[in-house]
Amino acid sequence: MTKDKPSKKSKNGDVAVPALGFWGMLRWAWTQLTTMRTALFLLLLVAVAAVPGSLFPQRDQSPEQVVQYINDNPFWGPLLDKLQFFDVFTSVWFSAIYILLFISLIGCVLPRTKQHVSASRRPPARTPARFARLPESSRLLLPDDVGSDADVQARIARILKKRRYRVQVREPEARVGASVAGERGYVREWGNLLFHYSLIGVLASVALGGLFGYSGQRALVEGQGFTNTLIDYDQFSPGHRTDAESLAPFSVKLEKFSVEYNRQERSDGKYGTPVAFSADVLVKDEPGAKWRKATIRPNHPLRINGSDVYLLGNGYAPHVKVRDGEGNVVFDESVVSQSQDSMNTSLSVIKVPDAKPDQLAFQGFFLPTTALNSQGVAYSADPDALAPTLNLNSFYGDLGLDDGKPQNVYVLDTSKLKELNNRELEAGGITLGREGDAKTYELPDGKGTIEFTGVDRFIGIEVRHDPAKGWVGVFAGLAVLGLVTSLFIPRRRVWVKLTPADSDSGRIIELGLLARGEDPRLAVEAQALRDALTKEFPGLTGVEVVSTVHGVQRTLRD
Image 1 (cartoon, one colour):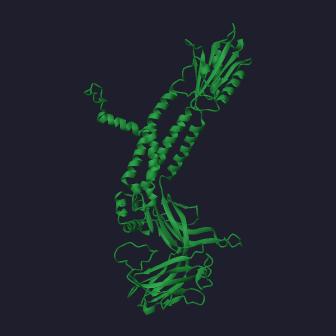
Image 2 (image 1 turned 120 degrees about the vertical axis):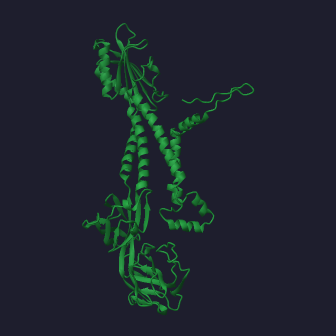
């Protein structure tokens, strides 16, 4: 064992404070770290440290937004990047706080567990000499014909055991006569310990989920399929220990997406709002398995091989065919369009990098049910596709896809493009699909043609895999159970002793109760014990009852 450095006397003769030394500093640091106050502070610090993860874009979820943020903020962007504010949950400082919280909680709980195990094995506390100092005390006159002290003690012990007290029968001592001591409520501390162990379990499960879980999003158009591989995701957020081989190889194919709209006349303006969604899909659990039918609804995810597939959103995907200036079909797909309002007015962006002699692009709005206002401007009058039209502007030039920089498929950068069609140009805008309008449009300057061939629905799905999610639920339930136990089970001690009566014959049963902390029902427990003694010993009469439970109450100490 190491020893602290000896104290030294100062020049004026005063004794200087002894130096702790290296091991002494370590013991002091460990003592400070393993206090409950430090654990609560670290728990609060974890919550505060997670805030930047919601304020700033995170690299593992949206790397293009991180790049954009750094470009838009030339001073703060690089500084925040060095401080790992774009990788909060994998940063050194967040991991350090998380690990210290683990150590602090474990260092708090293990010694308390050891102490409580020892306390649970110890006999109840010594019988007090004067019960009048206890918050609840009674003196009851015992009839003469009830038997010996040992018989009375045995009968009192049975009463206390029925009320779930841990009982010890004691022989007369110097200042205390024959007595029975009882104690209950140790489950209260076990509940407290269960809460803290469960909190450690929740934190450990969340950490494991972050290591081995993943989530990803994908837009699926009717008729399209999806396989659970990295290349098939539109956006993917892997765990720190997730790799391509750990993904379960299941497949999902969207057959049909259905929306039910409110078609009852209403005065609150909610006519035509959607009231139900359902996606009919085909599922293949593994390669070589047969397809099976399933349905995904909001709040009713599809469970496949330990992963949950959620229905996130939906919209329209107008099907467009584009021919270039040489007459070749260079685009023939359904274009996922982003809804902008409750009437499903949707923004459509089409990029055609394979067109010749120039790359083509289109940008505009898809209107499910087209109507014209008094100024002749088209708008969508209903969210259902009753009269769909596609209103576009066209561009040609360099799309910027060949320089290797990632682009958002829903955003068109027109800085290097020239306009072919626009309302303000002589050629005007492109309107396809409305009654009286053609569904094929020939682009100016022989750049090609665009054709609106139909409308499909699409859904947004999210695949979440969290192997520790079940354990989080189990530990959370245990934490609630432990918290309820520690709050509602009281810790009490009771003593019953026999003393001679003031007269020449008879004996007095003295009853005293003490609680740890505040216990407003201690008086009720004292009355219940008096009733039980009266029933056990007919003829028992009360001599004195003292209750201070609503006044100053003493605290029980081990």
